[in-house]
Length: 165
Image 1 (cartoon, one colour):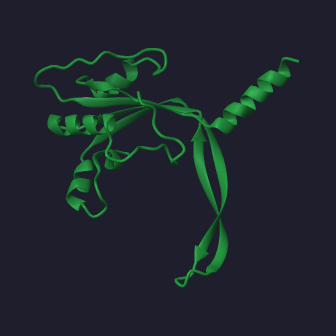
Image 2 (cartoon, helix red, strand yellow; image 1 turned 45 degrees about the vertical axis):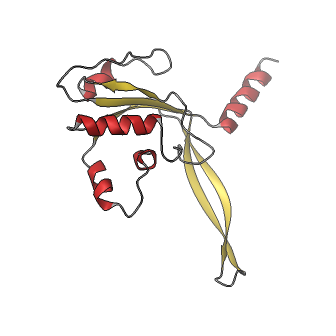
């Protein structure tokens, strides 16, 4: 997600290696459900003729909620990442193109200890923290994301509707 937001390309090794210096912590607020997406793909020969069909299985989380904190010693680098996440170079997705991130998935940029941020931050959808900054302490980006999946929601709505009658 960071690579896409920053607009880095696969051959830009120096930029990609800098991302390895980032520390991150994650809190799972809701584990979600693992879904399997069954797909049939086609492989073509160089001359354009169909070579074969094959089956692929992709796995996705449905209705999961995570809270993530990113940390780095260089505050300017964190600011760059923060701005890139707010205005990404390439669109960010959650596993597949049909699941773009919410417009408000970034909670803010803070200077607390990353683990303390995870401990004290209430559930993402019940409260929003205010941004605050000190002068010389390192910054940390905090974001929360809900991984919705429409089929699961439709099934739940059908179950709830049918159980009422």
